Image (cartoon, rainbow, N blue to C red; front, top):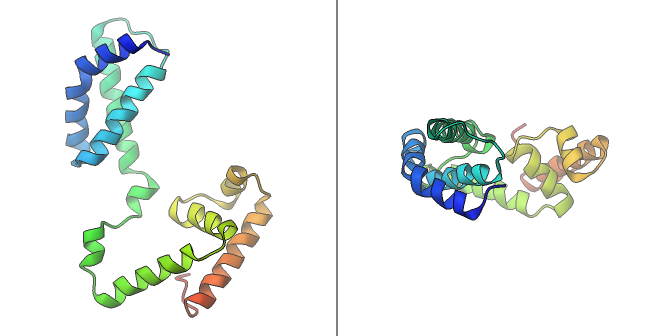
Length: 160
């Protein structure tokens, strides 16, 4: 782990470059700030030694670009819709999205967790089992029961 002095020097020296790279890739201030923090946290936690200032700069460039790419290809980024786009949808679709969200939120916690991890984060049942410390068959059972509850709550249309 690097010292506070090393971190301050790196931030002073590379912060503008990191922010510019992020804005070029992400075109979004909030995401830029998230990646900025990620990059400098990786630097502080990294034990890499640099041969020269150019080597260190190249490291920052590569880490920043990779972090931006990771964010752009993340499951969350691919499977979300901006709020303003939802608001532009016809009323029946907005109402249906709200109805589905309310149904998911009304599930008991043990179902809500597996539904969230599976449908929103994109984890498989074995991965969810590992995360929650449960048997994979238990996860399949919880998902099936949650789907059944949602099917009853939403009138038979769960989108599957």
